[in-house]
Length: 323
Ligand SMILES: Cc1cc2nc3c(=O)[nH]c(=O)nc-3n(C[C@H](O)[C@H](O)[C@H](O)COP(=O)(O)O)c2cc1C
Image (tube, rainbow, N blue to C red):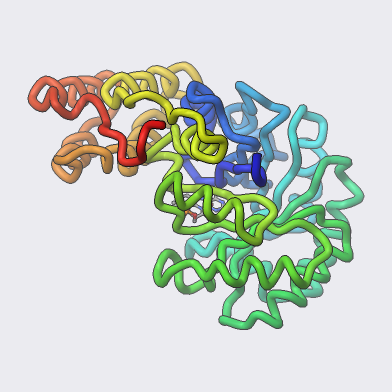
């Protein structure tokens, strides 16, 4: 086996239903949760039990916390520390305007001193592995990134995940993977790389390159079997048999119904299918049809009708050779 494979934190996506789906294929090494806002968590918001549900494998789940206020973030870490989990991660990379303008996510990268002070406080609140996920920063400046991460490491962060883009790039330009290896050369703690991996063969290639773990986001939603497929390629075992896309879609809707509150069903199904439909020929049409619907049963009907009209699409034809 090469380095660990991690599922990325993705708002509205990295929840229990997706983890269950990935586990059906054999799982990945660790699952980051979607970001959990510190304020509602410590104030007992109505949906917090859903955000903190670490099933089906809590010992491999890393809770990601987000927020701007150090007091609230430390209280959130203290609360989560009581749960069975693999670690606590701090979101210092999200550049969504609503998050960054509020002083959370990538906004932490504006000040080495503030970020260092936060990590120093968090370190005292949790015995769990403490990590930070971040971007390059506001500017394309490797020296600043290296100084920022060195100071976090000095305060006791156990590892860093780098999504090597600047704050304003969002998903523009290619992720600069050379920054991952450069950062790893500077730091004494492990560095995970993340960004733009498009298939299992690329995952295998990245995993044997210069990083300590590889994190996958959007590809794992489109292809929940990708981790299993990559491990099979690494060990020259047969890749999972042809994928039944129709059944997988129904399985996901069923898992959503069981593991998420009704208020979340529609938005989370839309998010999932915005990636998963890319496996299909008429994906744009199908996404538009699904987005028009609310509720799981209406979406199930659209899904069923698609495969009734296109039965040849049920099974995904493998692009990688079956050994
Ligand atoms: C829908 C969506 C939601 C995301 N939410 C989060 C989040 O909650 N926390 C975070 O650190 N990054 C978040 N990200 C960024 C991903 O974790 C990851 O860094 C990014 O998608 C690049 O990896 P990929 O190319 O493998 O998708 C999100 C990305 C997407 C697409």
